[in-house]
Each structure stands twice: as structure tokens, then as C-alpha cells.
Amino acid sequence: MTTSDLFEETYSALLANKTRSGLTMLGIIIGIASVIAMISIGSGAQTTIQSSIQSLGSNLLMVLPGVQRGVGTQISTGRGGAQSLTAADADAIAALPTVKAVSPEVSSRNQVTARGTNTNTQIIGTNIDYLLTRNTELDTGQFISEQNIRAASKVAVIGPATRDDLFGAGNDPINQTIKIKQIEFKIIGVTKSKGGSGFSNPDNLIFIPYTTAQRFLTGNEYLTTIDVQAIDQNSMADLQTQITAMLLERHNISDPQLADFNILNQSDIVAAASSITNTFTILLGSVAGISLVVGGIGIMNMMLTTVTERTRGIGLRKAIGAKKRDINLQFLSEAVMLTFAGGFIGIILGWLIAYLISQFGGISTSISTFSVLLAFGVSAAIGIIFGYYPARRASNLNPIEALRYE
Image 1 (spheres, rainbow, N blue to C red):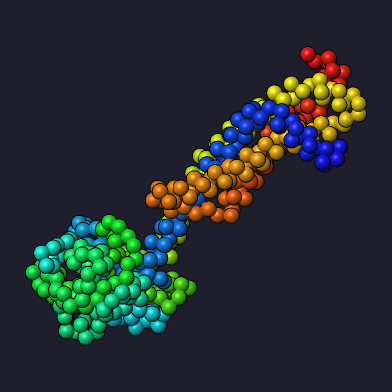
Image 2 (image 1 turned 180 degrees about the horizontal axis):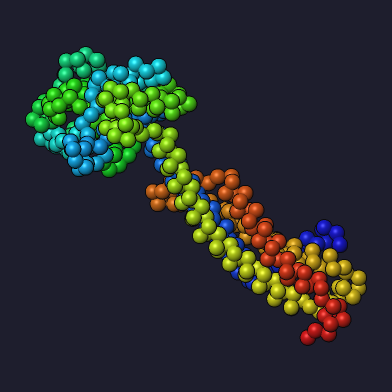
């Protein structure tokens, strides 16, 4: 049997009962579309989470206060409860050779008023290096200068969301004043939008000199965070070790287990988030893959029914010289063609579902070449696996018994 004859017979056999062929393919179509859509949602979620973490800054280490313990007691205020980091610590870290930038932070949440409007937002006391450590850019005006730090100037740089809340969208707030704790601050700049929502929205922040925040907002010399940018990603682990050793020495702590600070490594956060989203993607794909198995069982059921219906025809073909291999190949090709056609339609449907979810569902999706190849490979495997038994059964029919079949 030539390839063209095989293709022609397969095509004719599937079209002989269009409704049954279409319903059989439906299981594969739904399965393939589900797998592609679910994997695209998982991949999109992973990309979104990684982008959000990367937007915090590049090659970033965050030094945070640790646990505050009472003297002679086991009572602990929990992580972040200690007041242990100072500007002197930040200066010492900045002197390390693999440090590119250091931005001390004093953070507090306050009610802010301006021209009869008000909002509740986060105030970040920091310095000029914040632009580097947190990948922040200016839209208009200027950022906090070293002169502002030394003089504890009452100046502020605001995010675009804060500008819209206090002054209205599109209005220029430069040289306008706002009040924080009834203290007037002059606006000297506005940052570019980074996107975000909720309490972590980087567009809904106000930046002031950290010395000003210490004097007028917190009333002490301690820092909330020290952001450290390494010169490259390869030096982050060594830099973390150096910072740990230096701060233990500066704070006169001999036991690292009693450290009054913590260091978060951005690379570790990205790796942990990627691990979680990978698991999430595999789970979604596995659940959707169940429908592929159901579709494969449908194909096997249809092919077994087809073998029964065509028993006399099989006997006739074998009686005039058709070999077992020809019969086997014919029924196997029918199963594979069904799954390939269903897989192709399923890929298009899966891409369409992912696109609609991205456009109207507010969820980022990402269709990878791997997911498409995986879906197509699985559909081919299903055609071969679930089509093999019916094809083998047809090829093993005794021609005499087949011709007697009613």
C-alpha cells in the first residue's frame, strides 16, 4: 500500500461518519486547549512575579532590623522589631569594594494633606542612591541631594499616584507644598510610573531626606532598611557574607544566631518565587492533562467500534492479499490523523483562550514554544497509544471469520 493510498483511505474513512469523528476529536481539542491555556496562565504568572521582584531593584540586598529581645528574658518582639541599623552602618557598607550603591531608608505611613485634599500613604526617607537601588526614574524635577541630606531639608519627591490624589491628574505639583504631621514640605520632583497596586504600589510613595524623616517623623536615629546594590549578580552572595560579618562586628555580636539584623537576597527571592510558580504551572497542566486522557479513551472507543463495523471489509481485504501490516497501519493512521487534527484545532483554541484571558481577564499569559510542542507531541502520542490496540485487533482478525461476520 502506497502512502497516497493510505492517506486517501484514511481520509475517506473519517469523513464517512463526520459527526462521530468530530465528537471524538472534541475531547482532544478540549484537552490540548486546556493544557496550553493553563500553562500560559502559569508562565504569565511567573513572568509577572519575577518582573515585580526585579522592579524592586537589580542585584539588590536588603538589610533589615532583626529580632529585639528583652534583657535576661526570652520575650521577643519578632523579626523587624529591633532598632539596630544606623546611618553609620550604611556608610560602612558603602565602603565595601563590591558595593555599587547604598540607600538608607526610614519608612513610616502618614496622612498627607495639600490644597484641601488628603491621602494616606507611605513616606520613605532616603538619599540619591535610591534611584539606583530601586530602579526608580524621575519624570520631572529633581531627586533628593546630598545637600538636602546634610541640612535635613523639608523637601519631597512624590510618585505619580500620589500626585494625582493630591493635585489631580495632569497637574504640575513642582514647588507646591504638602503637609506631613502638620509640617510643610516643598515638592521638588515627581517619579516615573512603575505600575502597581495596593499598599506596595511604588507610584504611591513620597520621598524625603532620611535625616528629615529621622528628625521630624520617627524622632530617632535608626533606619528601617538599608538597600544595597552589588556591582553584579555574581558578587551578591560574597557581599552578603561580608555585610553579615561586618555588622556582627560593629554591633558587638559574637553569635550569628543572635544577630539583630536580617539580610534578604533578591536572587533568593526570585528563585523561591520561580519554584512556587513552576509548581503551580505543573499542577495546572496536570489537571488539564486529565482531559487528554479522557479524549484518548474516546478515540480508542471510536476505533474499536469502527473495527467492529468494518469487520467484513477487513476480512475481504485480507482475503485478496492485504497484509497484517497494511491493516494495522490503516487503523493506526486514522487514530493519529484524528488526534493531529484535534491537536491543531486545540492549539488555536488554546491560544485564543489565553489571548482573551490576557485582554479581558486582567491576568497576564505567556504562550511558549515548549507548551505548543508539548501539546502537539502529547496529541501524537495519544493517537499512537490509544490507536494501537484497535489497529492490532483489526490486523489479527481471521479473514474467514471476518467474512462470516454479520
